[in-house]
Image (cartoon, rainbow, N blue to C red):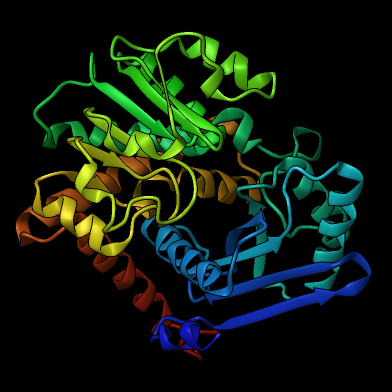
Length: 371
């Protein structure tokens, strides 16, 4: 816990809650980072190895993401310790128990994240009412995973970044690290625009083919609960080997810190568009910038999901949500890259400056600067 407080600053975190309920063996953490812009939206992540530090870092990323997107929401995150693949009869009571344990924290709005989905949000909605987004259609939601809202934003960020690189999207070699909802839909949207998917990894392995992979076959394998490693052609690789595959566009769409000081030297790409939250360590990202690799930061590129959630929260239509994603992500990507070029700083530094300026303007209007 002390390392989280060591990272505290003028923005937050405003609140850190540890939840333990022995009947359900419930262990969870909520970090509300900043609510100056409004009630905080942030996903519920379920994994066996989450931590307070990771939760706090993700909550800060949500503060910056929501501010950069111009949303009237602050940033937060919750994490639940457990196997996301546990049977529904175990998972549902666990998530319902968490919702009940967090009753009264009305400044926090749940959303789906790694290990949780629209069914999980429906259980939370049932317990709390009006405190979840990413709901099933039957409850008036815009299913983020089914439609690929986050990936749609990534595609928009790639389009905006094309003005800053020396290659065309048509024929560009694409590598996806993490083939869950975000990675799968990102591949789909970019392949439709002419990109060639040459490598993809999931939690069980990776597959590489320099002439391109059949996306429909990969989707079929995942739909059957299999790994991309079972793709019939190409070179089968270890999961983390995709870091070193030469490509034009590299998209991380899995866990934090997958690229770090120990492996960043293996990367051979021209453009990184961060689909996961905090997928690179700071030193790794800076190393790529110094090598001339363009890196679009996570909270700029992957804001599509939370933009869609915020639109759902206001009962807007699916088409309006996707129009907002295109407009906001494209505009912010272009603004960040222009600022980075003018000030000769890394894109993340430019993005953080832009987002922090917006948060501080909101904080200046509040009686209490953080709360």
